[in-house]
Length: 304
Ligand SMILES: NC(=O)c1ccc[n+]([C@@H]2O[C@H](COP(=O)([O-])OP(=O)(O)OC[C@H]3O[C@@H](n4cnc5c(N)ncnc54)[C@H](OP(=O)(O)O)[C@@H]3O)[C@@H](O)[C@H]2O)c1
Image (tube, rainbow, N blue to C red; front, side, top):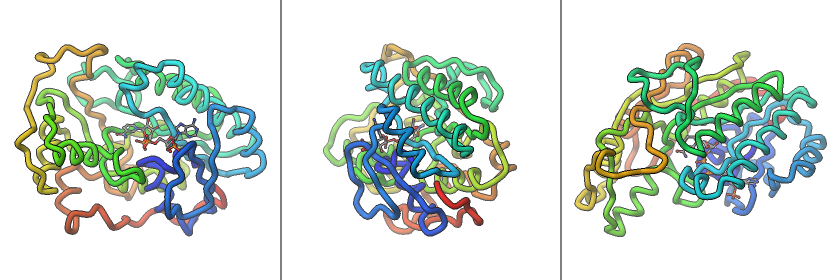
């Protein structure tokens, strides 16, 4: 699996431990206590990626690595293309050559948020940002490049990350604890999901006969402001520096998609793993920790 040092990858690795013979790869940050084999591998180095995969011969590739910071992707388009598109294409071609299944993690930002109703898997994408565009091109590379593929489109991810600063809750908590002003939009809607729920759903999906596109998002539509307030209240952070704003008051280039609600009915029908909304996920926390892994899939393939 790629992105082993990232927010999502670390949760996938934890849930895969003991059931998959896992090789996790990262670029620069070696995560402590990784439950499996771990190596540094630059995914932008196509020859090195091909060679390592030919050697390891995975049955399943879970691709969590990305330039996942949308603002940075906008500023550094070449890097975003190299990592988000070209590296994904390399993995897709390797998966076909090795007869492996590829699970690629995509984003709700492939849509423009103007539909006015929840997006289903077959709706035509129309990204507004460079990040969304690169993830869409990566989806196309997956469809064209390999035979057995899954695309899991997700939304804002909350939960602890190895660096302590990648989860949506971690970013907000850092800002509020430092007393920084935080502007949150009341008219930008998303369906956040916990990293734990998402990782469990991905592993269950990967271990099933299903292929194709799935929307793995939480089952609750919330504005950025509502998300922030729920997190702050649950973790006991002061909300004094949170400011409710409208996207109309803050000119942005590219504009933020206003209403990115993805319909997760197809995934809920296919999977046992619950795709909880943020309110339910926060209500089930013990203390101030995300803790507890939900049960995941059985009978995994030998190597991933
Ligand atoms: N976070 C969200 O809210 C969100 C929302 C929707 C979709 N997604 C998607 O979900 C996936 C996981 O996101 P995340 O938030 O977990 O990402 P993240 O925490 O930023 O982690 C990114 C991972 O990619 C690795 N990486 C970066 N450049 C690399 C390279 N050249 N070679 C090898 N590895 C490299 C990083 O390794 P190092 O740490 O070693 O640099 C890290 O493990 C991504 O596909 C993202 O697009 C995320």
